[in-house]
Length: 360
Image (cartoon, rainbow, N blue to C red; front, top):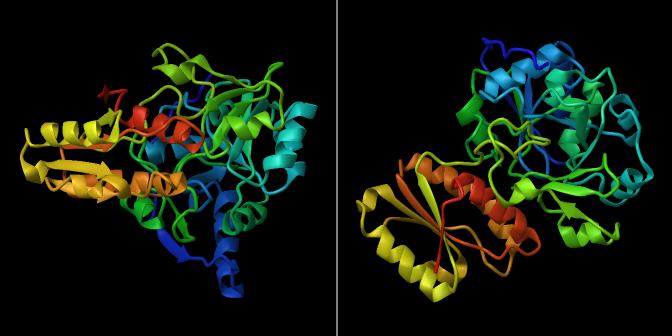
């Protein structure tokens, strides 16, 4: 059973700036954050993917506080973050050899694995499942914070549930100021999309959420890698999600988002045709370096080059949040290839758009 989410009144949120080389003074801030975790509090912290909202993964009350602060459905599992491979044994009932091969290759890094949980891991953390999601982030502030906490850190993205994930501390502040204890400001994240999630509880590894670690990378470790059928569409409302990001609408701006996919010239033509139907002050277009000059109507944001998928991933959530700042009601974005990192980019866009896509 999943515990009922409790309402929580938090003191004013304190923000500590932390550099990547972590000075002695900054480490004292990290120690404070670790103490807050041990006391059952909540701390937002940077990772290489997005900012996470952390609580003690072994404390059911802390996990309930995370759900409450975010307004997150309590059947949506949390990911337990660790700083050392030995902590796997605190969380997982068994660690198959295949999981060891995977973690040896990609940890620390943007990869989450699903394993069968130990009884010490509360169902509040796992969303009522008998499995637990685990990862070791590749960020010096995150790793130092987890070490100082002395416990695995349950952490979804540090935003209001359903909104675009935060890639800066300012994004966290906009969403959660006054709802959590501390924000560790480690600057902008490196990647900008959430981790790849792989289910390791069966005979064949199964991708539950695509991310920076793509299918080709995983295929260098395993002869066969499957994809969960839910990745091709919506999960039924009566189905328990196996991992974060599978069931509910995520990453979404306030305005209506529509993806236009196809030949570049046809895409820009169709977007321009659709955009001019609405008031210019309420219309936004998210584009790439290659197509930027094709648009001169509404709020236009360029998020990077098609030749650099990482720049697209890095800029996506910030662009969606900027559209909200300008109160844009109608947003159009160019579609991307679903190869390599493009698979994760399109996964997030389809979720954000409610699967609203126009092919041209």
